[in-house]
Every structure is written in structure tokens, then in C-alpha cells.
Image (cartoon, rainbow, N blue to C red; front, side, top):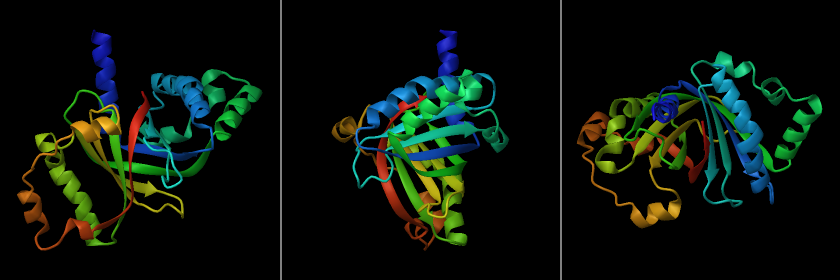
Length: 247
């Protein structure tokens, strides 16, 4: 029982308090979803577990898009969690962590890259996180934004730090978090993310059972004054994801 509690606490702790995460955003190739899933739940899982045991990684999350379509920018999000980014550049590979030969390593990567296409890789910094559970809820809505430059965009992030508990009051969400993008490619269309989380197994269960409740946002409105938080950012995409692997 103590071991189970420790695992749950570690899972919650890593997501809430890891300062940084490296996100790899993937798109499935036609027919590649099951092949990618098998590799993630086998070789990639073993590598992540060993890196966590060795203290080179805080946590490892894989989120699967609820809807796979051409209109969805990302089908698969792999998140590596770190306290500092020095660990990101050391002891990462399949060959190092599984003692695999060059050919075995090449085959695993070749099979994976034949099933997915890398869209982007970014580094994000934790700004705020609140959770009402002792574990990480299963269903997440990833919200990608482009912040307005200057004071307005900065104030929007400060709102998250100051009022993050408000966003999960009255069970409107089971957990909520805010992350700033601190390293991205030239083509990355967003520079901030928020994630709403609920303890539902899938989107249909959410639609059938979620009942939004009123939350008193008067203190937030006072903080903004005559300005509007909606003017501080532009949404680039919103999509539901479910847990594929959480370590």
C-alpha cells in the first residue's frame, strides 16, 4: 500500500512541480497509430523508467489525441519533465539506457519514425498548476495560445499565477495548469499553453456527465479593470487528449 501511495504521489508531484518540460508534438502517419503505441509502451517506457530511476528525468507523459484527423495539428504529445535543463542533454538514448546495439536502436527508431511525423519540439516552463486529486486526471484539453507582446501578455500570465485556484473552484475543472514556451522553432504558432484536466476517461464521458458550475470571478475582473484577458492572447488550437502513458 505504501508503494502504491508513493507512486501516486510521485506522479502528481512530478507534473505539478517540475519546472520544465520538453514537448515533442507528433502527427500519425496513415495506419501508424498502433505501431507507435506499441513502441511507446515497450522500448520508450523502459528507457523513461530507467532515466527516472537514475535521476535523469522527473517524469514522462504521453498524451493521445481524442480525434485523429487532418485538421488536428497534433495527434501525440510526448512530455519529458525536468527540474533543470542540464539533464535534458545527458543520458537520453535507447542505446545508453537499454544497452541496445546500434542496429537494434536504429530499428526501433526507424519503426517509430515510419509511424509518426515530428511536427515540432518545444521547451516549456511551469507558471502555475493546481490539482484537486492525488493523481493526474485522465482527460486533458490542451489550449495553445499566441500572447500579445508587452504588458498585456505578461499580465495574462500573472493572472494564472495569482488566481490559478479560481480556475478549479466548484469542480469546474479537476486540475489546471499554465506553461510558457521558452524555446521553440521559427514555425511554432504558439508561445503559451494552458491545460484543463478532468477525471473522465474520454471526451464522450465528459460531454455526457460534465455539468459546469458558476465561479465567482469578481476578484479577477477587478485585477483586469477595464482591460480584458481575451485581448491578451489569440487561440491557435484547442484539442482533447487522453493519457497513453504517465510515469
